[in-house]
Structures are given as C-alpha cells and as structure tokens.
Image 1: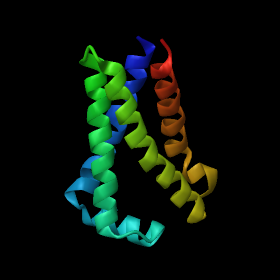
Image 2: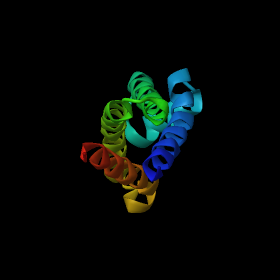
Image 3: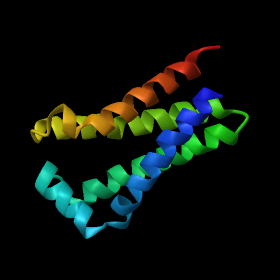
Image 4: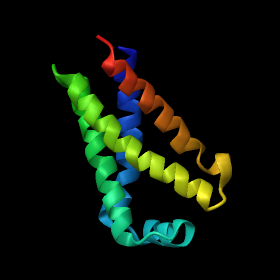
Length: 118
C-alpha cells in the first residue's frame, strides 16, 4: 500500500513538472538554455520521458500487472532524474539545487527495488 502512495506521489510531481516542458514553455526553455546549456528540443524530450514514465507509474497503481508498469516507469523517470542531478551539479547548483531530483530519484529507486521482490 505504501508503494502505491509513493508511486502516486512521484508520478504526480513529475507529471506536473513535465507539462511546461512538453508544451515548449518559453520560460522553461530559457531556464534549460541558460542554466543547463540544453536546447528546447532536449527539454521537450526530457519532459516527454517524464510524462510517459509518470503515466506508467499511475497505471501501476490501478493495474493488476502493476509491477511491470512500475518498473518501466521508474526506469524512464530515473534516466531523466539522473540527468537532472548531473546537470544541476555540473551547473554549480550543488546538492541544494538538486535536492528535489535526489529525493524523487531515491524514492523512485526504492519503489523499483520493491518491484523486484516476490
């Protein structure tokens, strides 16, 4: 039951943050360009991976074969979060700048490990 809540939390948080990226929001694009030296195209791709991964996590909550969806979603999201953590550290934001991504990545990794248990 706790895994469903944490999957829901990660999915909701990342789904909300992916919407401006997928829509190509100019403010988000400027932030990506200036802060991380990434193009608008890369931003949209990262947002799309976040959104699809979030949808998989949402489906894992209501599906009978939820573990498979949770694994796929967790892997997709952790790829993006790993890149976000790296880019925050590379940009000099330090641990404080990457704190949210670290928290979500850690929680998502624990959920992934839980899906591997029988």
